[in-house]
Image (tube, rainbow, N blue to C red; front, side):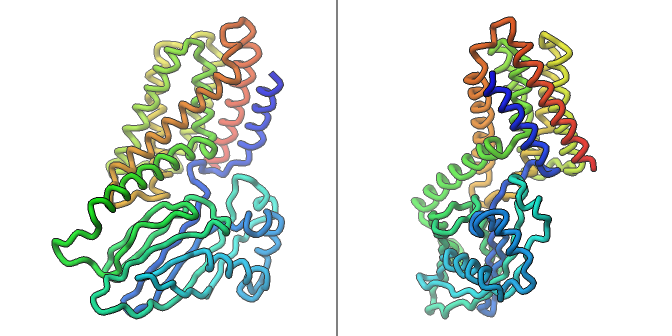
Length: 381
């Protein structure tokens, strides 16, 4: 029981520090714009905490008044540019930092483990001369020697308006991107390349769907834990989790296709309130009402809007859009099932004992309710 109490304390201390919106992943964003005149503009948004040596060092570096001339920052940006291995037709691109926007936050915010101080870096370069008839085959890879926060959301823009967005991890080769559109009727990639890219995309979105629950979706984790605490019967628990899954799948799909949009200012506090509701119900009622399945379904619709906000933030690929959407949802479900499995591992041996409610359900539900109500206030403010 000491481990369970320590877990509750950790949830309260760590969760209280969460930002108002709990649906964003710490990630690196890189936009590469190939202009018609051959100029290349690159915008990088990255959390440099690990690469700077820790939050204290990162905070100190962020105070620089001329960041491009500050030796430590200049060296750091040099490593970053060197780790961004962009090439066109096998020729590496030469990029130069031209502007920097450092995070202007307090040292306490830099030290907050769930706050991500983002540095904006602008780079410029010139496209190497293309051979006659060459399509301009762009490939990207990000060196594992640099501490990129993953996923790395890479977006490539061609001068004719075409673009490609892919989620990558360090060391992974990007799909190819052609600066020149292929002639009408000509396939841009082979069937084998298309299948390979489809499987890679599916795996990436499944992985990031899972990460959106564990370890980065504490609000959704607490909702599932609240269901677990209020239900001793595993069959009933699975019914409730299934109801929640079906509901948030509906709103996730509708929102991803643009058929449903609700402002985050409404969704985020409502999600926090739904978590508090489930926890307070656990405190007031010993047995689960048949209406809980209906309530959980309604709350699932709400949480689906939260998942959709995260997915919009990360972006869905134009190719294999449906596959990526389904994979993300499957990753979310695997994360939720992992939460149930972990809860069973920690407290399953106590579930049928008379002391289970006193030792687990009541303190656990009190902690969840307190944290969820605190989130509600934070998100309303």
